[in-house]
Image 1: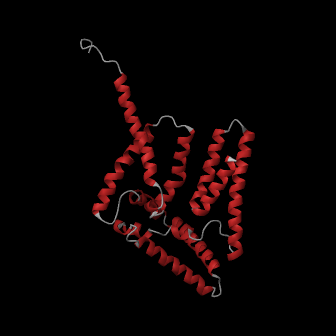
Image 2: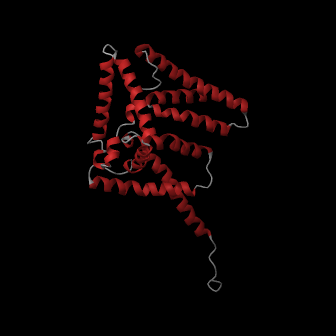
Image 3: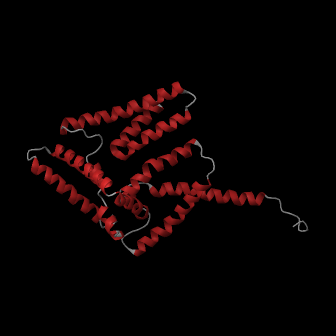
Length: 263
């Protein structure tokens, strides 16, 4: 039942946000770590998880193909997402990367409409659903081509995301306010991760989810900080840093006090 619930949950999450497809290999990897000595149990659980996951996606795949005539695994906006914020990265204009001033989205939407209009001009009688699927495919191909032709831009976008997701905002006051709130938490989280000597299975799973899912999604999507639970996760890991400081003070308090003459 637990394996079935995991498969259904990850399948539904993938339909909701296609980036969640990265959670399936992470779950299977940690299942291997937990039941590596029980191969039969591991294979049965993995089969149940994958079966229910594929069942959910296959129903959606069949539905999309029946109405559009195209194979659409998740959604039809995956290709255009990559272009959100590209102009902001090129200009490094931090004031345009806010929810209140969505220049990043406006530029991406203009590109989406231009690609869609070009397809509609070539195939005048195409249905709207197939038009959306074709647009997503072409934008995905354009994003892939951009990464291969301009790898330095892709690196720049990734590195710029490391700044954009934290505190940069439309005004200096907002930026300083976010920085004063988040940077101490980020520093504590880094200290907590570095000082964590032994990771149990649950902590390792959480860290692996962050590395495999949240970090790439957040850094590649310019507006991801408005749709990802970044602050609660940072608070959680910053707790490790705070606990490490408290343990250090406790260990110092437990040390025997030397005699003054000996000192």
